Length: 380
Image (cartoon, rainbow, N blue to C red; front, side, top):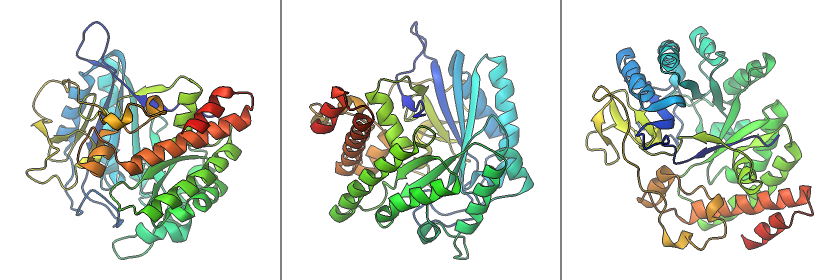
């Protein structure tokens, strides 16, 4: 099944309420990590962790930001979040009690590097209500290029052990794969390999901090064409997020609403210090004077309701044939690539165009009489 990807949206509750139908809270529970991935954007590792009080207060404010009947998406971030597995377990329990009292649905989730396998970590990973994602960059030799321990050893073998155990006990999870200029030529083979291990649902994420030269971009387009074919072969059980999202848009399927990419409006990230950010990817080392830090502190205030942030506003986007299907509304990606939250760059545009074109191609092949898909493929 293609599935129902999430979509970010204007999710203010009806009737003029300042509360949200869906709110996304991310708690950075620690700056520490047992790996030293060389593409990591969170800065130097240090044993600075979130206090239980700060986490609980942040949850209280987030719950109060959601309309009764709405959803609180609660993410845990690091560093490596499972280094604070005990804290996460306490915070999930606390969030559930707060959500139940407010008649709000709770959806907790985290992404782990797959190498922390303490009893406390497994207890968290096995919680049935948790959306679990395991980072794996594909083929072991590709994964180990960048995802290494502090002593320089690769982490692929340990991650694969975690993945195999999760599969053996039938624990549902996503595989998360970071794509960089030097690994993109191996992307189709890495996805094939990961699927061969039994991981059928894969989230791809582009390293937007990397320098992508023109040759790298060409390799990206070539790889995406091949990945679209892999996606087709894996249907209906498999899933690859970049194509699932486009397929849902093009086929007008219902999509799960999410506050993801709210960028301060319906989405808040809290650092261990209590400082607030519009997206967890921008916290970094949480240094004084950080230009993207939001006003206020997690311990101050009763909720996280605030005014809307500007969306994509690049005039070049207006005549684009895929404007209504495009994900360059991600303000964080735009900020990293151009320094402007409203303006994507050529790399982000190419990713969207190619994914939309190839999704339309695959859907057209699956339904040859669908003239809309043929037209979309030709227009991109």
